[in-house]
Amino acid sequence: MQKFIWSEKYEMGITHLDSQHQYMFGLANEIVRLVNKGANTRELTEVIESLVEYVQLHFDAEERAMEKCGYPGLDEHRQQHVDLTQKLFRLGLGQPSTSQALELTKLVIHWMQHHIMDSDMDFGMFIKDRSNTS
Image 1 (cartoon, rainbow, N blue to C red):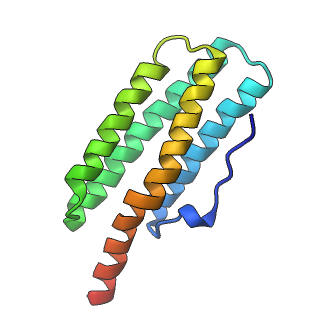
Image 2 (cartoon, helix red, strand yellow):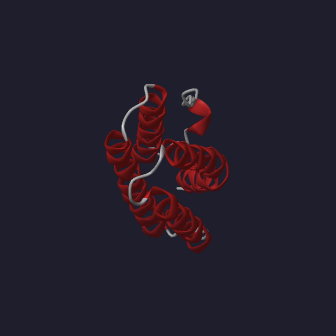
């Protein structure tokens, strides 16, 4: 499996959230690296657990930022986070097989790519618009 490439097109203009997105890409790429080298289940489990935990921390940070600025799309955005978190727990708990690890990684990256380009960019534009009118 090939690594996932971070691109500036994923930057929403909120530095700490952009950094978190980039870090999640890095964790997903670590799973790809481990799978490609034939790592054991224990190694995969450690990185998957780190990814799932970090995704939750990121969601909390993103939602706090949205609350702080009164973002009107917060409820819908929060539901998207809940939906992904539930999928991650279904796939990522226990001792995942290599195929489950890849499935989880693909899910996270695919979701992030689309979520960042859609929902997160809407939030970024909201922040930019607010700062331009201040």
